Amino acid sequence: KYDNAPMPHSVFFKGGYAVHATNFVKRLGQPASHGCVRLHPVNAADFYQLVEIFGPANTRIVIVK
Image (cartoon, rainbow, N blue to C red; front, side, top):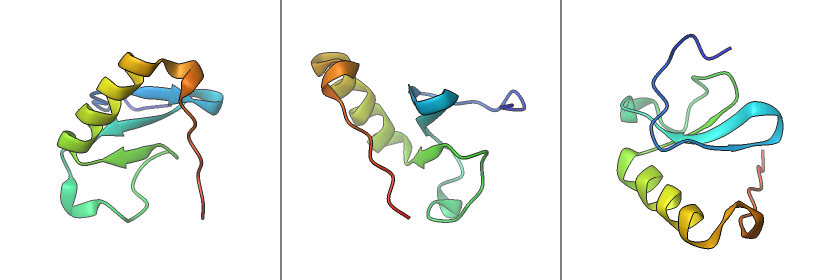
């Protein structure tokens, strides 16, 4: 499913999708994955750390199209 793509700082949610970092920052804001939410590496690291601190049960991920 992930084509062995690197997914640093992954936070998984609904059905195996994840919020994770990408090194292809020029493509942010454009569809480029299998449905995951891609973030700049700095933002992904911050988000991952916040989820570690507050826990997945206290984290809500809302996708708005």
